Length: 260
Image 1 (cartoon, rainbow, N blue to C red):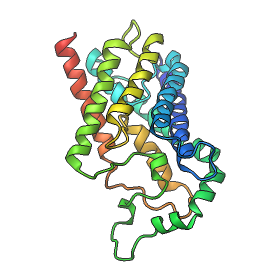
Image 2: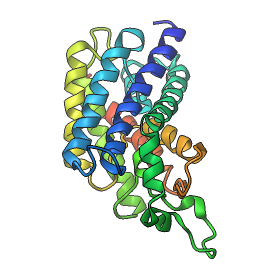
Image 3: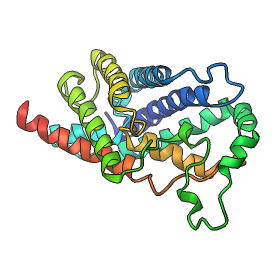
Image 4: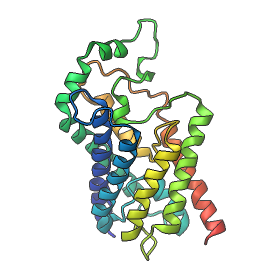
């Protein structure tokens, strides 16, 4: 795979991932959406299908990493780090593009939802609040994750554990014969693993298990001209970045000790 193929594949694939994954969050959250309040099962299966579609599309070009944690885990397994920054760049750009496309798709619903007096009240911060950007706005959950209970140790551990499960499953069940990306059956297995992680481990933090899936859309949320959108919760933003990367390192190391 050439560097240009990797960058294009990861950009397209991660854009599809965040478009469809963010899309199911928007569908369940926003007023005037036919899927509003469809529930957690819809979220978990929506994200699972998002992985399925994005990975099948991008696998021929880049191996369908779509996630810096996957890239790190694979690099630890293979010992090859040469294209790491190319993967990361494509993944972050794709995540941001996907979030913008999701916003365009639900543009009218965002306008109606954020014009509701209830959400205007939620977005307003008291003048005494010195850190308005550290407060989650009423639609931030469509773009990125957040904890139900704010506890740095627990939140970080949750992301580490969830990501470690994902990376172990990919390394043991999901790779192409050359070991550099997801295979045809591996894509299907990984998609079901993502659903399982969401159902079992997603409750505390919303299971980012992917740094760019959280960071890219969070940046877009901060930049978009959404009235009454509230803050982007930058105080929490490092946890869904650091946690998955730590989980990937631990899973990659465990794989090399136990399976290699």
